[in-house]
Structure formats: structure tokens, C-alpha cells
Image 1 (cartoon, rainbow, N blue to C red):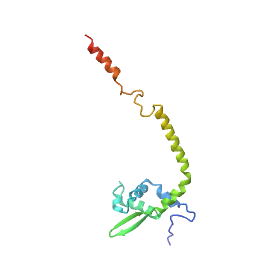
Image 2 (tube, rainbow, N blue to C red; image 1 turned 90 degrees about the vertical axis):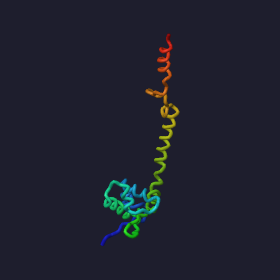
Image 3 (cartoon, rainbow, N blue to C red; image 1 turned 90 degrees about the horizontal axis):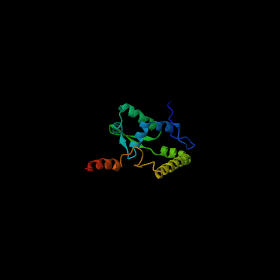
Image 4 (cartoon, rainbow, N blue to C red; image 1 turned 45 degrees about the vertical axis):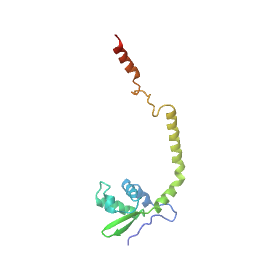
Length: 146
């Protein structure tokens, strides 16, 4: 008898399967490909330099984690994004938001300071070649001498 895992446990926190499924960049890209709507497996596989069986295995992991559902249509299998586990991941991450918001705010402050000090986007930085007036005036003055 095979035991099926559910995408979440009673505590509301997504199961390890969801996090494990999301840990792989190919699987994250597959989920992104389903944002606009259901797509056939073959079409999804065409976006990767992986074999179709490899992409099918990634889709199976996403299905077992409850992140996608599969719908047979004739000879094709269409995959649908199931957002519920992602909402649960977002809810679990929410208390941690202030950490990265603070870091992003600090980065913005540093970039603003650099911009005010002339360190970002300043054309007068050492080695800049935007001001050639001195070199041109010297060469022109030699030509004007009788």
C-alpha cells in the first residue's frame, strides 16, 4: 500500500515536500510557466535543455507536493498551477518580511548617499573621458601659431 503525502499538515505550515519542490530552479521555472494558465507537458518541456522524461519527473515532484495538478486531454497532459501551497508558503514567510525590508531600506540609503556624493553615475570619475576640452585646446593652439 502506497501512502500519499498531503501538501500541508494540520499546523498550516507547508510540508517539507513543498519546500523541497521549490528548492529546484527548474521546478520554480516550471511554476512560472504556469502562471498564465494551463499548459501541456510537451510545451513546458520545450523551454528547457532537459530531456522530456527529466521535465516529466520535475512535474511529478510538483504534483506530489500539491503545487500543480494534471489534466489528461486526449494524448496530452495539461498542467495547472495550484496556488494554495504557495499562499501557505507566503503566509509562513510573512513574519520574516521585516528582515529583508530593513536590508533593502539600508541598501537604498547607501545608494542614495553614493549618488549624492557623486559616486554613482558621475561622469567626472577618475579615468573619465567625457571632458576633452583641455586636450583639444592644446592641440588647437599649436595649429594656430604662425
